[in-house]
Amino acid sequence: MVKLRLKRCGKKQRALYRIVAIDVRSRREGRDLRKVGFYDPIKNQTYLNIPVILYFLEQGAQPTGTVQDISKKAGVFMELCPNQQTKFN
Image (cartoon, rainbow, N blue to C red):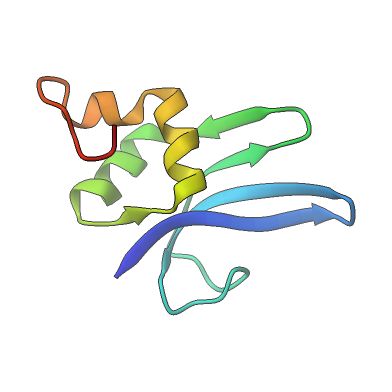
């Protein structure tokens, strides 16, 4: 099973997170299948590759809680099913 989750990078006391598609059995810094965005909590910046995120969601990937919140703010789930309410809303 694939999940969309955060992978920590950056310096000590200066965390940056990559949003990655990764197998659930892998550890947090394990090998990812694909990088789909990044999140900087200090500057509150986010970059999402929305077509790739939509592809993984359609294939059955499950986002973690934090990735789900970040994606919801960016409107990713509205593009997934624009005509109906989804379970992610």
